[in-house]
Length: 282
Image 1 (tube, rainbow, N blue to C red):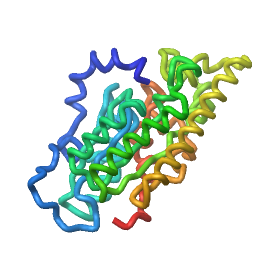
Image 2 (cartoon, rainbow, N blue to C red; image 1 turned 30 degrees about the vertical axis):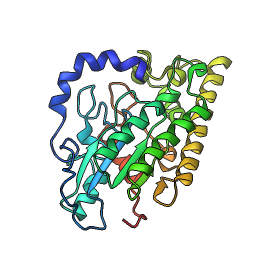
Image 3 (cartoon, one colour; image 1 turned 180 degrees about the vertical axis):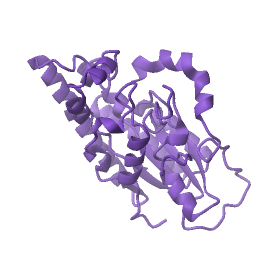
């Protein structure tokens, strides 16, 4: 994704201002000199990741729209983790540090910013861009992916030893191809270069194209395995979604009608529902 939409982001960056709200996700960092209120719920939620968590394409224009994020969004249209927390603790705040195009290599810098924001609860959804390369040969190697995720988690653990961390599985891009390759609208959108490792030549049944898609599917499964293991290694303040986001049986009604890739409002709500860590004792 990094490789195909940076030019679009540059042209449309001004439109993002119309999409962003000041409700929760867009607010300033908490004042580090202020004593945090006592609560079993986190005072500051921080979202890390890529365009999915940034709410890309979810507010009517093809830009990031963090107010609609499944994690830290403050919009009334998405029952995000942050809004669920705020319903229980009215003084809760949120920051969305997810960046469209981000890969695992960018996660440590985001983690450092989460430390600066004094987060109590950090969500991480990363890896789709590591798989969405020009071809299978340029996908991030699994070992490299794990090393980069570990570096980010180490930064969080060092800087925020008491924070809760949620690591979310990468959605099933092969499932998206299965759904969309017979849709003329989806095929037309994907032909503009969206996630070419999986979605290039989407109607082709050639053996080489089938092997390519299978390789991407396997790589995402390997990434998800490493995300789970990295969280286990972190300790008892890290939880995963147990593969819930990856298991979502996405329909085309859950993605926007511009790129047929990023979740729309319904898709963001679905992600919020399946990843909500209700079992965590805050």
